[in-house]
Length: 263
Image 1 (tube, rainbow, N blue to C red):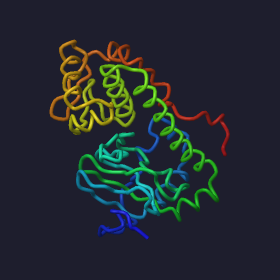
Image 2 (cartoon, rainbow, N blue to C red; image 1 turned 135 degrees about the horizontal axis):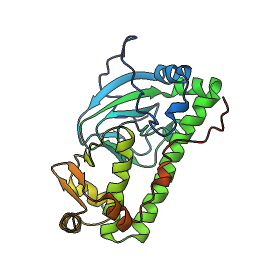
Image 3 (cartoon, rainbow, N blue to C red; image 1 turned 120 degrees about the vertical axis):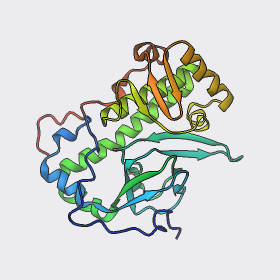
Image 4 (cartoon, one colour; image 1 turned 90 degrees about the horizontal axis):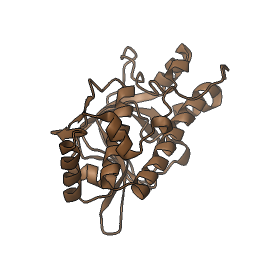
């Protein structure tokens, strides 16, 4: 049976005195309802931490997966290729995301997962996640909520690609990235790092790289945003959101409604 790219790497076992690794998970989206025991249990699922190079396929379609990856640093993506080898990026992942948590239930993925930049990931073994499902319903619900966030973002991406013009698609993408990175404290004065290429952005927005370049120039000339050397500056977030028909409600800032119950 095929092994994943991570399985093939030499991984150093985490030591018992390692610093906390899960601090960005669901930050501003439910982490505040996690108890100290919840946090300790989640930390206990981490078997190893690995540094990955940029442009590395981490999980291939139809491979058996035995762990899920919590992104600590860098940018990753999920993507699909057509029969001609043309790539469509279907999700960007930023620090704090459990990139492939749905693989815990599904065991196989129907798409590829790759790094776009150098990345650091914490690997949660599925055998350890099994223990959480069996004994910690509250934490299980939060992990489930994390996968539902992915589904909500996928629906929004379908809307973006199906209903918006090119400038609206790109504006929407950057509004989403701004909101998600702000939740994990990676935005400063409307500026954040997102060191991917224009080709990557084009493959997420469903346009050609040439058209993507024109859209970025148009957004810059209209005083809405700039993207240079991997740095994004949101110059007029309100106007950009209006162009994108962007409503951040689907990102569920504040987290799930736990109804005050200790479940």
